[in-house]
Length: 466
Image (tube, rainbow, N blue to C red; front, side, top):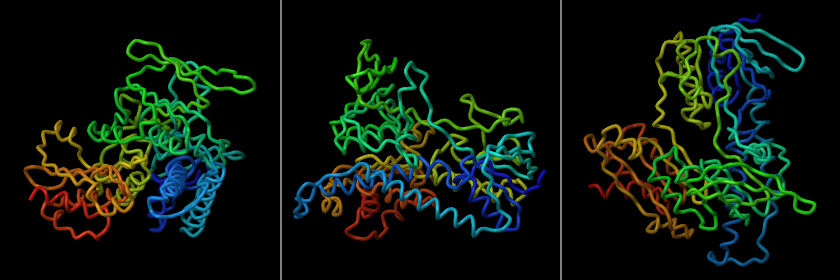
């Protein structure tokens, strides 16, 4: 049995920032990950590969607008297999980068390839391909991530998941003529817009009456109404089954569902199961006395601690903010509190985490949204800036969308914001900094953002309230 100061179950964003920090300070740290590499699901099958594909499609979209820019060209097209090769190369490059970071890290840090399970609240067993090891740790971070949720319907085995599309070395290197996407969360919506831009016939089938049900309704409906109308949205449904159909020498699929009491069917060459992701809980965690919520997810406090102070649950595994950058910040909170002897001195502000839906168009938000403010009894002042009057949006002919900001009516401090349209993923970074630092209307309105950039709208929106 090896004694360590910190043991992490997983080596992704919820684990390695804390691991590196403690190892640098002289603490003995071991990370165990079933993949045997750093970076977690984000690089293997999530944000990096999906956004690499998106940016390739963005270049294609701009190329199709060549006449708008006064450019000439013939036969503007794409090769999806080469887009996948591009995606794979980015993943390989980043894996090599992380391997070098690990190689150059403190000698106090070790990464073990294997599956970790709890023996007791201080002891973890790791089983690898040809070994089994036991570690006793002063502190433990559970950062085991999440996996696609599979809806328990007949024919579920005929569906692919986002992992199949985005994983390194995917076998899907050609586009289907049509796809049925089950679920209207961010993964489903993003993939729907990607495939639609490449000419695939897309039908998205969603259980509720709108997309993105975990997000503010006004925000979600604004994005929903901004989507290309060629994407067929079937909302308010109940999916019954997926059936594999032989058509000549090939196969396609029928998706049966009910809507308004009527049984309907969509036929597609591919079916994507996109009902979100569920946390992966290490074996034995439930026997330690770690508390779970009603959904079976590990409960934590704002210090990222479970009810057992030296055991933390960081990143996707706690289900609160399933984003890589959020996991990194949570991991640092863990590290700081471990330094303090598992006494909380640092806390996670989940309101100060930006979320971006990388659709066409993009949409991002941060902080307290109007629906939340109403439930919390917070009166808000809101202001907006429409991209139709923005210089950069005009330059790129991307006129749809807005920046919208929400201020506490009593304190006049910004508490939330969203951006739909051009540069949304960048603009939300400035806005979340304003939220995190509780800037007031006068400060936001006084920002001198550069012209001609879309960030001018951050201040111009706030000036409408003065």
